[in-house]
Length: 452
Ligand code: NDP
Image (cartoon, rainbow, N blue to C red):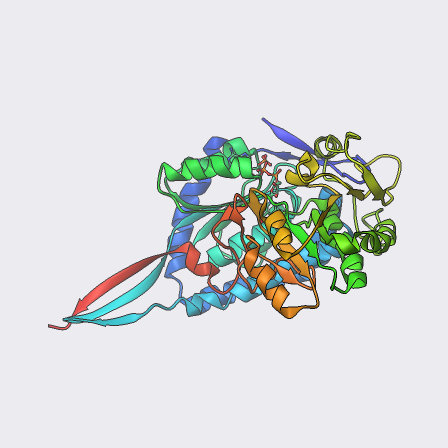
């Protein structure tokens, strides 16, 4: 029997073990899900809506428990973990309106009428990474369930606890048995089986670009729909005319939130050369003041990295070859702690081009608007980003010029569930969230009714 020993990343204490789901168990879960899905899809839309609202209410009643679990398993600061649990509730609430709104079209055609139906796909497999175990799961399972599908959820091996609890809460809320099954285990076993099993009709994958390509190739073998939310190296672009104080005070949160383990992290800070020195003067106290420490402390803004292995991956980028502008602070002692670090690399240094997924930001000067856009786009990724300027026209031009799926002007806003989310280029394929997400979990069917 294989299992994973889970470790609290803040103090390195063992918090439990989780048994891995075997291949045979995944296949049995798929068979159960097929049966559960048929009954779920046959329910009246209003009853599916009500069931999702009850699930949302049950999550709401367990926000604190879920948040505490995430603090122990992932090291997220308690305030952030509460937000993440609340996001699951909100996304369920948002999509609970969908079952009654999955309406098609009636199209007048010669000889009769053509009617569009949005049929559920069947069983959907959702594969989640370790960085935001709760929200990323919810962004997949809530619209998929709302569209009449069954869901199999594979959490990351390292951070399965909140997903397992969400599976229990679904049942407690009255969601039908086997409709939403959480299957902890290895990506190469459970996740891969979602890809290869013919009765799993769609895969929603969030994770690394490398594994995402593998998943996409596997899905191609069955022409299976797949959504990919992958890596990023997003740019935070600060023009000379911007409110520099606001841009500098927000910059640490935009990259060090979740210890930089965020696909939307603005890990490249592009600053117009004429204000570079002034901007760094403003940034330094903001970085030094970014509160890194005990995740249970309400004031903490950044916790530890998720694991020893990931800590070592991030630390390997800090090999002394690139000048360090300044760093913040981090606790000593046990735990995978790393201080926020601001680097001054060249445009071609590895730290400036590769996704680090840790609390490290590269500051890169640019000359003018065209240079800023070219530099921002000089990446295989295109997920997120921010633009700071007081010139509305420039804000519009640069936002249109940057090849990225989710941008914000004069703020560091990133994912909002009411708006579509996803990446350009190797940051992903397809969009999650927003009002149309349930449609992405359906097949469109057109039926011609003859009037003769
Ligand atoms: P991985 O790609 O290693 O893992 C992601 C998930 O895929 C895990 O559940 C993993 O399981 C599973 N998996 C691994 N191998 C396979 C396989 N062969 N077939 C199917 N599933 C598999 O990514 P990380 O967990 O390291 O997550 C970090 C990455 O995720 C970063 O690159 C980040 O940018 C990206 N990300 C993207 C987001 C977006 O929305 N665009 C959001 C958040 C993160 P196991 O845990 O067992 O390895």
